[in-house]
Structures are given as C-alpha cells and as structure tokens.
Image (cartoon, rainbow, N blue to C red; front, side):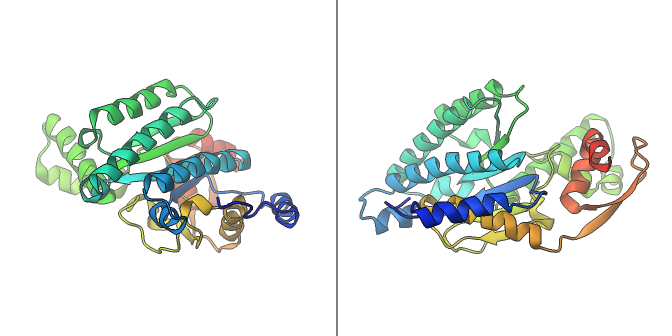
Length: 291
C-alpha cells in the first residue's frame, strides 16, 4: 500500500462503520485474481517487477485474514497461470516462483488454515512443487479457512484433466465409450476438477480494473458474481473488500430449489446455485442450513 493511503482517522471511522453494517450472510467461497503488481512497481519507480509481486503476496496474506475474520470459509487465489510459466521474462518468473513458495510456506503455518494446491504440479519447478505439496500435507487435517492456491493453473486445462480422469476411470471399469457418453453429466465433471468436492465460488474479485477471467475457474464460476476493483493489487484496501461483500449481498442472486436429496433430507427450499452445489456434495451442511 502506498504510504499514508487509507490510514487516516476518517478512513478508520468509515471502515469501522462498514464492519458493523456487514450483511449477516457472506459468501461461502471467494475467488481472488490479484492483478497489477508489475504496474504498481513501475509506477513507484522500482527497477524490478519482483517488488510488486512481493507486495502483492503480502497483500494476499492480509486479504486472507480479512476473509477469515468475516467468516468466509473458502478462498481461491490465482497466483500463477500456465501461460505465465512460458510467457514471463525468465528473471521475473524466477523471482515470482520464489515469492509464491514463500507465501505457500507462510500460509501453511497459519493456525488451522488448510492449504491446497490446485493446478498441474508436473509443469512446475521441482522446488516449488515440493513446497506446495508440503503445505497441502501439513494442513490436510485442518478445518479452518480453506485456501486454494492456483499455481501452474489453467481453467481449460483443468477441464481437460477432469475429462481425462473420467475416461481413465471408466476405461478401468471396462465400460464402453457409448456408455460413458450416455452417463456423462456436469456434476461428474465437477467432481473431477482440481476443486472437486468444494462449493463453487459465490464471488470472484479482480483488482487493477481489468474485466476478464483470464482462464481462472472457468467451470466453477458459471454462476458466480463478479466484482472489479480499480486499485492495483498491492493497493487493495480492506474497505475495497468490504464494499465488494456489501455489493454481493445486495445483488439478486439466482435461486434454485432443493427437494428430497438422495440422502433423505426431504426439504423444499431455495438455494443459490453455489449453495445447491455444496448441499449436494455435503448433505451434513445442508441439514444445518435448513434448520
């Protein structure tokens, strides 16, 4: 954050007021696309983009604490795309890989947070892949904030990998292609994504004013709300985040009906698409939601 920006008494008063007026219902899953780190570094006169990436990583750690404090249960961070691995300058990429490894290690030591790598590990340098694997294993039993780190990630590649997984599993069972074609469903593909078993994101936030998905959670964001922030990544303020949550709560979310799920819950209620997905994958959560 730029020096003295958003730290005055009026800002503190306003953000305190926003916190008090937060809606009772917050998103279950928030996806964040932090963008603008390089522009931030250039604007401040740094000779290396690494300064921007490091400031952006620090902001993401801070962002996760905001989410945790608000009761958001799942956050997905877009840190490195498949395209970045081949298109970024070699020195910038090396710096970025080191910064991501440091961030993953730091997050894995947050009390009760669960870290999960989503993406293709085989396309990453060995050292980074090992750090991400260790962070995932170290936090596997935690039940606090669930943090998905999208590293070496691409939405189209994820869908391809999911379909390949389905085909391989079907082939092992001795089924025919005709049987597979007849039985394939969107839910089945969803179960084989990197985020299989998780609810889809309710809200996708992107910084820097850019308004595109950039191959992030293409399948999962089909029914998500989007919020675009003009601030560059490292300049994101808590007030920007709280405004996004307030805006999300005020939107007219599409609703769908859950009626007599397979496990015998036997209810007829309206849910958002994301909540419906979670209800199907986690009947225990659904029981609590309908009480």
